[in-house]
Structures are given as structure tokens and as C-alpha cells.
Length: 372
Image (spheres, rainbow, N blue to C red):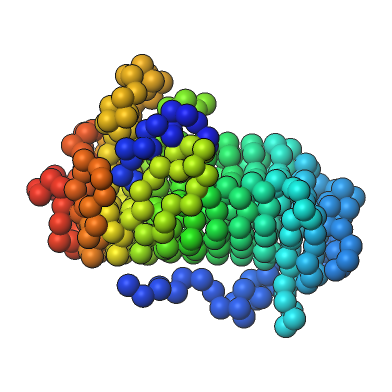
């Protein structure tokens, strides 16, 4: 969540089992990387040399193979179709680590359409692990980000992209974030020990499947906020995800934005987005809420934000469907907020929202509208 004073104020009032294996084994990871490296690479980077030098020398569409080792550098990609493929060995894989004062591990600019990154670990950068802006049809596959400041993976204003088998931990805002983007597929990812595990903000046509989010403050956040260039969010689908034990103490920068005020214990939060489908997920052990559907204006009213602040968006959730989820052992701790701790929660806003086939114990209201 970007550092907006408005968002921070809203967030002040925002209610925001065993580990299920969805990530591949080491052998599967190695095979996946090898499959991406088929054919002769256009360049090979060996330990002790520079990935950035190979990127600078590459032509559009080149594949750069990266041999195992630790590379202390930040990388900027500004040409289309580059494919960076890390190779693993018995001694280890590819690690890209902050040389000391860099904000972003890998930055992909608008002229980096078609960028693909496979099988690398990115560590200890100041702000983002991978930052992609206005670069369409990207692929992030088997990418691990660790302690990279605010965001692990951060695509922004992109059209078309895939994030598969990635992992993010230790981020002060969000582990895996999609912002103001369309047509994004996310599958088999893992987010833990972040403030927000997975976040989809002001996006449309996004799917999140077969992923797990645990030990965050919030497991999955799908949200429409005012004050951004994209003012709608629709057609988000969350299926077959495992969202559990998101009860981490909030460690966001207290001078930051929204993320600094999100209370611990939230599983899946749907905030103001339309036609969002939450289906066949397992949501357990989140102390405050399992799955919530709410309007942004309600939160704004609680925070004393004037109505004109929301003039640029239609903030009520419409056409959302919460169906066939297992949602239990949530809502065991009541924070100091005017909403009850429950498995399922709806604030009553919007139209054509419905709930059916869910396994749960507690809801607010007690009777939720059924799906036809």
C-alpha cells in the first residue's frame, strides 16, 4: 500500500492448521529452471562477474543464464523481452544481494515489456525486491524475496503478467503486491512474516490460486482506494488458497501509510472491489477475521474523512461472491474496533453480494444473503 496520508487515516480504523504444502520441492525447482534454460543462452553470467553488464550488452529478446553464486549488485532492465534464468546446483543457487545502499534489487522500466525472471533469490534491498512499472506481459517464476524493505514483488501499472511459485518474507508493507494492473495470474505462491501477505490494489482481471499466506498481519487484501490514477477494480478471483494464522505483530514503519495501522489477525479482506469471487479457500486461525467484505466509505466515515475524498471512486463492493470456503477457528480475539471478531463479516454495503456453501461458525450479520 503506497504511503498516502488518506490511506493511513482510513487504515487506523481498518479491520483489516498445519502448513499446507503448495511450493515445489528443490528438485522440482531445479527442473523448472532447467526447462526455462533450454536452448543456447545468448549470454552466461558466472559468479564474480556482473549481471548488469550482461543486461547492458544484451539485445532485445536475449536469454541470459546466471550461474550459481551471490551477486552483490542492483539491476536495471530497460529493453524488451529479456529473460534472466538462474541455474541451481548442489552447492546452491543464484542470490542477488544489496551491495549496500540500493533501494531496488531488480528494476524493470516501461521499455522492459516481456521481461522474465526465473529461479533467483533477492535479499536485503532497501525498498523493493523486484519493481516493475508499466512493463507488460512479465513473468516472475521461482523468485524468492527476503527482507527487501517495503515490498518483495511490486508490479505497478502493468497489463499482462504471471507470478508463479514465488516466495516473499520480511516486508514492511506487502510480500507480493499487484498495483493498478490488469490481466495478472498468480499461482502457487507463498507469503509469510510480512505486514500484508498478498495485496491486489485497484486492479482488474486478476486470479490468485493455490497459494498460501500465513504469519502476516493480513493474509490477502483486495482493495479499491481513492487518490490513485486507476479508479476501478473488478473481476478478482481467489481460489484454492490456504490463508491461516495471520496474527503477526505489525512491524510497519509507524510513520508510513495504511500498513502501519492494520490490526493483526485478518485472513482475506475484500474492500470496495466489484465482482470479486472468493471460492474454495481454506481460511483458519486468523484471530480477528476470516473473510470480510466491506466498503471503503464506511471506513472513511469511521476515520472522519470527508465524503469528497471518495468522489473519484464508487467505493461499495458489488457483485462479490463468497462460496464454498472452509472458514473456521477465526475471530477468537476482539480488537478495539467497532466490528465483531468472526469467521465471515459484511458491513451491509453494496449490491448483489452473496455467501453460499461456506463452512463456518460465526458471521456478522448472523444471516448473510445466499447466492442464487
